[in-house]
Image (tube, rainbow, N blue to C red; front, side, top):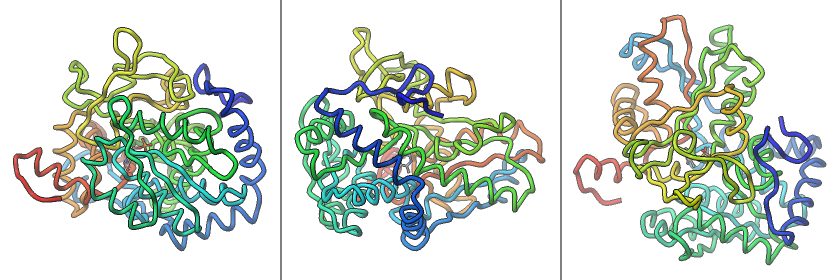
Length: 396
Ligand SMILES: *Cc1c(COP(=O)(O)O)cnc(C)c1O
């Protein structure tokens, strides 16, 4: 879908300092070489299969479907992947690519810590050094993930600039990459940043929609009516959408985090509240204040509180090929509890945003219609926070 300059419509591009140009050019050349190389693909498929537990299952949520009394709901079980989310797909791909490029060191940014843990996992497996930049605020909120990264052999560097959260960690990782390109690959965690990252990350995540397509054809003999996924930067969503983009009869719905509501300042819903801008090397939509500065964002879900959205989503929105809706904390928490009780599956609070929208619209559809919800991750990590949200204090 990208054109030559890494554009998706008017979005994307490479808005980066000159000092980073060589690094992204080297990355693009290497990616173009390896992406269709049989050995690379074979090694990646082996890692996906034997290490990450792919293919992930497509599960018919019969009880939830009956309870809602409308469309059939299928769950794409990315929560069953090694490390508990879709992030491992991208990280294994990038780590293997970096290794082929002769890099010995991975750096990464992380917000909630999930991408940091996935990167540290791949680094341990492939014998690479690993440094993770994490907002100081987040290192306190996500102490367990900091411990996991260190356990896996990574160094975690707290970032104190700005709001000391995810956006500052991304900025710091980009700065650090500039100063050490020769042996280091920046393993970016979502479909964002300068070209070629949005394309590379999307290609590694596209395995999700490739499998959904095969699995739903085997189970139902036809494509789904709707595919939905939560959207932070947008990697699990674009992965779930990609192989359906050229099937206009399949509706694609991205679910953003409304936080306490899109009419409040406590939101992370970029499409609903953001404006066109340039940040982190790309042109796209961003949450901004009245002066065009990046606005602080909020969501109960640490994995969705990024103030931007990947450029391919921005373009799918412009083209009206995909729809984007905003789901509040309260709606997501209700969905988190409902799936746990009806199906015995505790979803990540991020994924619960997509599920919440399915719960809303399934009753308005016929029993013949099919919704696939991408269950991007598992919810063990969220239990303490959701208990707290309900006024119960348990230890992490
Ligand atoms: C990180 C994360 C997300 C958000 O990232 P995307 O790039 O938008 O997919 C969603 N779900 C889970 C479980 C995550 O860990």
